[in-house]
Length: 479
Length: 106
Image (cartoon, rainbow over all chains, first blue to last red):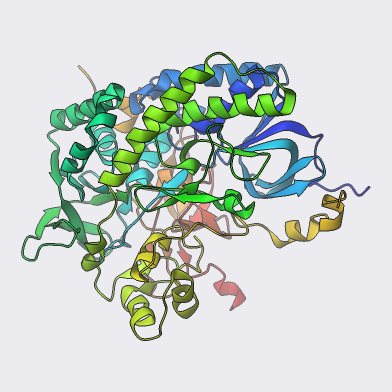
C-alpha cells in the first residue's frame, strides 16, 4: 500500500463541507446524535462569512458588536469544542475541498490544506454540503477601479481585519445585505452618504402574508433601518450606481434613477463624491461540489440556481445532503435550522436514530423562513434593463478584461446564444475566478438565464495532487 | 467619553504587538491576525497589482478569496490572494505585474 500525504484517514460517519452557520449547526447536532463527524472548512475559524470575526491576535473584546445573533453562534462553538475534546468531531481548518468522489464505503473528499496546499483526503459514509454563497455582481463603468469593493467584501474585511476601504463609502446594489453593511460601516466610523437600492421595497407589499409570519425578520429590518437613521444614512430605492469615476481609485459615483425594469432614466444621474463604493446585488449559491456529483438544481425566485432538496435536506444524490445557502439564499437563521434538520435525517439514515422531538418545530421554522426568503428574492431580482448602464468599453469579465462590446458582438454578429459560446469566443469567464464574478452578467448579456456552476475543480489544485489520486478502478473497487 | 468610532473601538480590540512588513520597500504596520489585504487597507493602500492586459491597478474586491483580484507577490512568490494570506512579521510584499511570472518570459 503506497503511503502518500493524501493517504486517507479512517472513514468517518459524516463529512461536513463548510463551517458557516449551516455546517456548524449540522456538525454539532450530528455529534450530539452520536455520529463521528469531520468538519472541513476553508477558513481558519468556524463561522463562515456570516460569523466571520477577528483572529485572536486582534484581541476583540466585543466581536458581537459586528454581528447579529452572535449568541446562537457562540453556543454552537462551545459545543463544537466540547465534541472536539471528546474526539467526536474533527475540525479541519484551512481545508478547501476541491472534489467529492464515490468510494466503496461512501465518499472520498479531496482537499488542499493551508498556504502550502498540502493534499488531504477524508472518507465518509455521508456528505453534507454547506458551501454557502458568494456575491452577485452586475458590472457598470468604473467597477474595476480600486476602492470599488463588494458589499459583502467590505463587510468581510471589516469583520475579520477591522479595516475599512475608505472614509466616505457609498453602499449600492440590491438586497437585504445592503442596510446591514451600511450600518456596520457607519458604526465602525465610515461616513455613508447613501444606500442605493435598485429594487423598490413596494415589491414586498405583494408578500404581506410571509412578512407577518416572520416578525423576527421585520424587527431585524427595523434594527438596520434604525441604525441607518442614527448615522444619517440616506436610503435611495429604485436607484443604482451607473458609473464610478476616478483615475487610480474611485473619487465619485454617478447615481441614476431606474425605471421598473432597472433601466436608467436619462437625465437623472447625479454625482456623489466618495473614496470607496461597496456594491453587490445579492448572493449566488456556491454549487460546484453538488453539481459535480450530479445533484439536481432548481431556479430560485431571484434568477439564480440552488440545489434541489427534499424535506429532510437530501439532494437528489443518495448519501449527499445540503443545508444553508447552497439550497437557496435564506440567511443565517434558516441555515442553522436546516443544518439541524439535515443532521437528524443523516443520523436516522445511517444509524436508525429516532428523529429528535424538536424536528417538527425545525421543519415549521424552515418553511416559514424559506417563504420569507423567496419573497425577498423575488423583490430584489434584477430587472432586465440593468444592462443599460453598461457601455461597450466596460469590462464585464474582470480577470480576462473582456469588455461588454466584445460580448455584444459575439451575440449579435457571431451567433452566440448562451454564456458557454460567449466564453469560447471572448474568454469571458476563463480567468482566475472561473466566472464567479462575471458569470451571471455574461449569461444575461447572452440572453439566457444563468446556468449552474459547473467547474470540475472548485478551487485551484496543484497538478501533482491530481497525479497522485488513486486510479478510478481502485476507488470504485465494488464495480 | 467614548473613543472616536473606528473598527477597533467598535469591538474594543486590544491587539497583540504590531509588527512591520514592507510593500514595495515602504514599511507598513500590521496587526497579528490581519490578512495582507487588511494590512494594506489599514495603510490606505487599495491597489497592489496591475492587470496583464491593460496594466490597470487592482486590489481586494470580494474579500473572501473568490475573485482573485487581490493577487500579490509575497516574499517573491506571485499570485497569492492577499485577502486570505495572514500577515507575518518581515513579509516582503511587492506589486504584482501581469501574471507575476515576468522573470520566466512566458
